[in-house]
Length: 631
Ligand SMILES: *[C@@H]1O[C@H](CO)[C@@H](O)[C@H](O)[C@H]1NC(C)=O
Ligand SMILES: *[C@@H]1O[C@H](CO)[C@@H](O)[C@H](O)[C@H]1NC(C)=O
Ligand SMILES: *[C@@H]1O[C@H](CO)[C@@H](O)[C@H](O)[C@H]1NC(C)=O
Ligand SMILES: *[C@@H]1O[C@H](CO)[C@@H](O)[C@H](O)[C@H]1NC(C)=O
Ligand SMILES: *[C@@H]1O[C@H](CO)[C@@H](O)[C@H](O)[C@H]1NC(C)=O
Image (cartoon, rainbow, N blue to C red):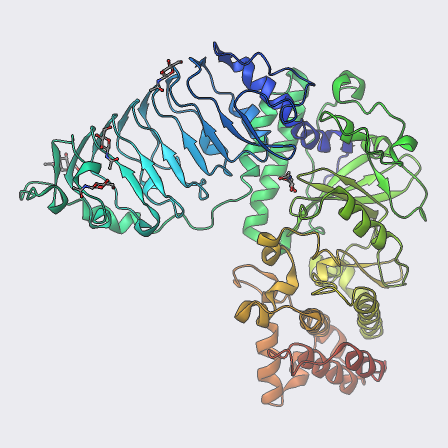
């Protein structure tokens, strides 16, 4: 086995920090790619939103739109710069003099509207260009010199409302519209389109299609001759609209952004980002399995001195950053230094200490990726990079984190520090060398599993229940107090005492992604009828209990339910058939005289995973019942 190599955390996170360049810096970069135009009031530091930069639309301090029409602009459209404007929803370049292929706007997966009318764009548009742009509502490409087929992916956009392609040289047949009911404004006239107009366009009249001599069909009052191609034939292959739109788009974004960083540094980051991107892909394939415990070697890279990256170098002392001053939030770079301590039991540290630490990629989970970092004082921490925790603003997030930082209970892992940025958060906690319960149970059976004898497993279950009970008291007002209880979020101390982590995130997590990221949202009541409650945590507890006693990996942790065992179903069937004993992990049942106690615990697990939350055990009942189980 090759040794795991370390690189400073700084270089892992640097790629992230580059993305945090303010909208303003990004606009300046964009301006540099343009030729002509009058963008004189785009001056760095003047405040793009406050000073109402020409053509810049804002919502509060966020740039949300660029309306750069009628400006005689040419040159390039710097997509890397646009990618840095996280809130960008619409871009208009109407009536300018841009030429060449359509810019790579498809990388901006959050766009709602694209207006490129009245330019000199040309060439064909790749068929899959719009695949990842599922939020697009308005696409205006009219009055250019586009040619080739109309991309299938364009006609498959689920939210498309306005489509203007008139006055171009699009040719071939018109692909069917997959979501015709949404579209209310359509113009395909004055192109070289041919064949029969598909049925899905019935709601429109001839004025949307005129000026295409090769078109036919009832809309135009022109019979299609036998030789005319029936465009409906294409429907079959086109009728599966792009499933699972990648909302984040971050995989490709980060790769692209990395290229803009200078020379040597760029190479380093590319390597890192490729590693991260590869991990991200693994996440897709393995989802939960690739979480935390499955370490992956980080490629050895030559790391230049941190000082060579002066522009981004943290300049304040780490101590000063603790005060989390509000006044320092201008520009993009000030945020780099802010690490806010919420729990000083393990000592104080700052962003600089963290950045210099030797780091190792631990893996990806539902909410983000995790790194281990060992600081010079010897403290090992886990840094979790949370991408889907942007529901709260800075102050409200601070309140939540400080509340978490105050918690003290033997089965709770209290976070140490956090770093806030608009689009992602870092959460720092102590590193537990034994890793997670998931890893210990299913990871490396031969070596670690043997220690998990019956008394240890019982102790772990009792500890988890105590921790959860504490969370239920502490966060009783939350919709779902823990929200994410599963074996990968239960860490084990040196003595195999369980520590719950990643709890009480529900108020912070993005609402639209909550059901992908938080395990409680896989409970039957949520899947069935979007109900969520403290009882959903009990369901998760039940899964963990069954997992520990059976030693089996629950299919419930997987996104696609392929692999693993539907542990709930299995246990219920076995109870009905009176064959409960067969369920118990042979590692603990073999030669044991505590089988009856194990069965008791299995039945408690089954009571926790009752599909109907009203029939499910309550927290106090679970505690009482578990306390009755003996070694
Ligand atoms: C700015 O963007 C952030 C995150 O993208 C969002 O939370 C915040 O509400 C936005 N502010 C305004 C005024 O839209
Ligand atoms: C296009 O922009 C030019 C200035 O760049 C302006 O004079 C002209 O009227 C605009 N055309 C339309 C149709 O708005
Ligand atoms: C055709 O549709 C357009 C708008 O979609 C409408 O303004 C126009 O009146 C319609 N023409 C006829 C002849 O129905
Ligand atoms: C479509 O565009 C053509 C050419 O600009 C125009 O004459 C026609 O009225 C438009 N039709 C609709 C429905 O917008
Ligand atoms: C029918 O489609 C084929 C290829 O798809 C094309 O080569 C041919 O020109 C089309 N014919 C007509 C009449 O549109």
